[in-house]
Length: 197
Image (cartoon, rainbow, N blue to C red):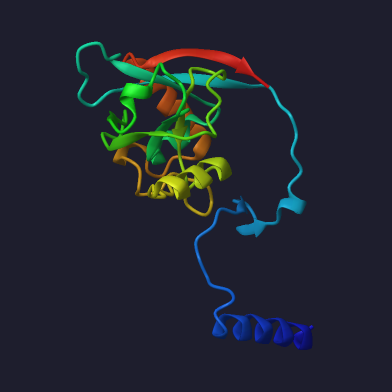
């Protein structure tokens, strides 16, 4: 109804002019078929059988006594193309000496920091979490706390965009997932795969 639309538009403009609202980047639930955002209330979550892939992320400049790599686990391997950090728990003594150091993001070559954040569960997986602020709500919050960049690696129709390395651009997210896993395996950086619900 046009009258309702006019009223909504007027309220948004008035609130903006009063400095009470602003336009900013936020994560949304995106439907790549209908090409529209969905509210949290419109999303129907279902449990399904999947996998937890464990990848080795090499330290950029290992020192004596350092591990060669950190193992991170993910249920969405394709999003690693947009990682901007690896997080560990601030009280996890296994990684305390590595906080502030750099990882070389495999397949991409980008240097990303190791950050300490209390969101990380040191008991889950390896205790190291890949952080992709543009593709996960929890990672977004960590990214805000640590001033991490947001690198969106997906087009509106869920293909890999130009922010990823050339060999992945244009792939569907499903094909990108397969290629990322195969490329990690070929590089000797696929640690193991667990079943995960």
